[in-house]
Image 1 (cartoon, rainbow, N blue to C red):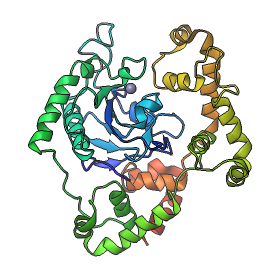
Image 2 (cartoon, helix red, strand yellow):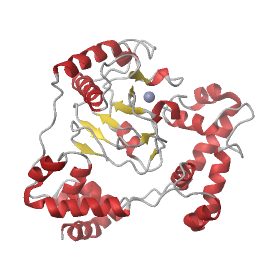
Image 3 (tube, rainbow, N blue to C red):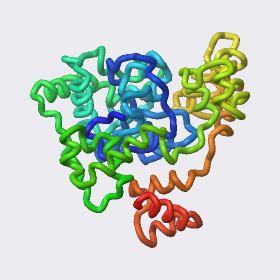
Image 4 (cartoon, rainbow, N blue to C red):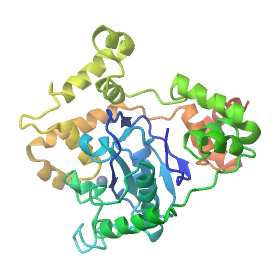
Length: 369
Ligand SMILES: [Zn+2]
């Protein structure tokens, strides 16, 4: 579970990642998340929208970790792109101007967000030993997929971003965040932070955690032994991804491991591999649906026109997906969110959790023991 030390916290990936299938990390791909409010973040972290990123940069400059670097995020509509990439989504402060996505003021981001992208690029380049930051290892989404992303503002600044990051890298002044305080935090929270890379490793981690070290380390080990704790039930789409990546083997082994989900997962795989999910023209309906969900095909009549003969098949795929994913968060997920501070405190928390308040509070108390 690797994240840059520049992140302030992690946000849920809800299983929206895949194996890199052995691809080394050789590039960073820049995106924008096409929303001036937090809607873009909500979509990326939702259970059902099939999109995620390694990092998400907010207008405040805050850097969030989503998919650990070991895994392929679902960001660029292309395995070739994301298989070997760290991806960044950045919140916009404004949208298209002058009717042109490529206008240098279209899809603007804040200076703080721009700086965070630069720092993150320098940090990743240093850790993966890229040497120089060049056109080959810092790219825009549009270089891999038909999209205006990352928008004119960032796109017109790509070489400036490269050279500023290169200067940081050469000076060795990539800022590294100090380890956060541990007082008052539960073992659970500290384990989250360790897994997010916030307490370093080896002696640095020991020193940072102090007397909590043994308990936190035991929790970290427990989690890596039993898989993700308190995760949502996996959707059929997630199980299909994992099956395609070899997690459940094949034949009888796969049948046994998937149990009563086997038929549904197999049907999903068959659809993706051509048994219904691939249009006669060879267009991958699943990929088109990904692109539509990222906003690359607009809405309504515009979407219909641009998708042409594939419109209905893509729309069916989107409808199918929206039925697959569980909608309501589990108590464990709500507890995670509370511990991340997303539900405030006291009466505010009580009000926002409503009928789930006591169950969530019990789960938090249970974890703290
Ligand atoms: Zn993009």
